[in-house]
Image (cartoon, rainbow, N blue to C red; front, side):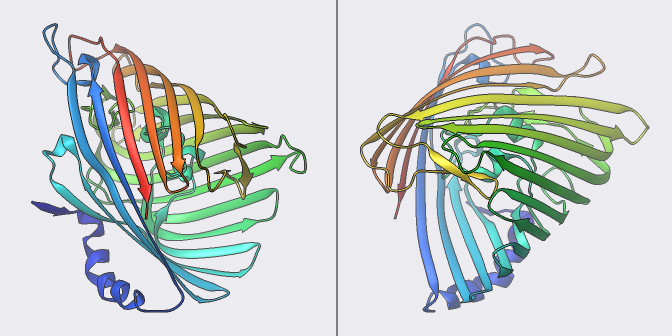
Length: 375
């Protein structure tokens, strides 16, 4: 069975003819990336796990993503990105989703405006994306508190050391039927001309979602796991999210951290406060780590026969008013870049949880593998 995401169904119908017309144009850049995952997850990651629960092994097509970039002229371009996946936790039901679908106008190198579906400007780890991320999955805090892609319009001002981004978006996903968001992010790079620049960023999002049932559910950084980390569930009115970023590059080392906090106003006037963070350090054994550019870390390109290690500690508190869960995880990862188009990733994750839980056995680790190739 093939499932088309409801949020993207109208984009799929309207843009497919235009998408295939562009395939025959001259000013087109086309790329395809495949990611295949295998996980072994202990009882911690399984809903309703008991003392007799054994580790679960799963494989999935995490992503088969095709991207098409069409340039109309020096100031006007567009992007169309289609993703196919077969998640293990959805009985391997094939999912087809539009990812980035937008038109962008950039009359100067300091101004960009775009309209369509794209990532809201909140959270460095979210904006970095799975293609450049050093770990297989984003941190728990990133997944819990950053919104990802939405339909909307945005503006970004930038120079060599600073960026200011703002956008207004329509909220529609599996959990929220209607609403709007105003999201903004500002970054600066201190000591930019040195070999060790310091990245600072702050972000904020105001989200109106009246009469929508709200709950944060997390898989603990393992995509094939169950949603075992949960906040209380209630009808929300508005949500505010704040984010702080701090990072630096030291030769072959990249250090990055983020802190998130969110306040949700319930329809009856009650307030809920949740938070999360991660600390991450990674290093390349044989090459440079990369650099920050326009508020985003850019890993070194064309890496071959290189090995990279990464350590990340992350935590989230989805507990308030004596309800909900608190969890943390320690991740150790190794990445091998066989050729510039091909890489292999290994993550070992040790979790911990307290508060309200959905199973009676919170033991066990997770081992995740990923094969990635760019055509």
